[in-house]
Image (cartoon, rainbow, N blue to C red; front, side, top):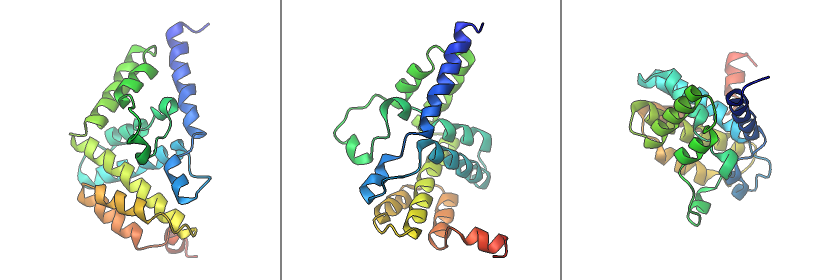
Length: 191
């Protein structure tokens, strides 16, 4: 029989599974009634974060870890669109995370909190890159939605582009904006 700490840590893992079903709600404003899940978004943010970190000379593993945990609070508070935040006082992400891992294994609790605190503070090279990865993923997703015929995503592209801090993120955004989302297939598979 598992001890209570193991059960509480496993419970955190089950809670993170909610991210696979929870949708990114901001896209609803563009008429997209079936946007990607928070987990889908977080996965690609992690990949983008690692790539940006390599390009920027930051620690890719640390950035990917921050990206993985950057939206985990949304299992408790939901994905609140930016316009909604104007009307709601939301508990700080660090506080939500503290509640989520309060009963987890002490090393898990300390590790997850440390990652989220650094991301939220946003003042290390890794946190800056991780935040750029989040914005760049939104831009890339908007480009994909645009290529599927959604003409209402330009605001998301512009806002994301204007939020980017690193030269590498701006360079990748420019490239993404000037290519088809399937260009990789055509170029690398000879299609």
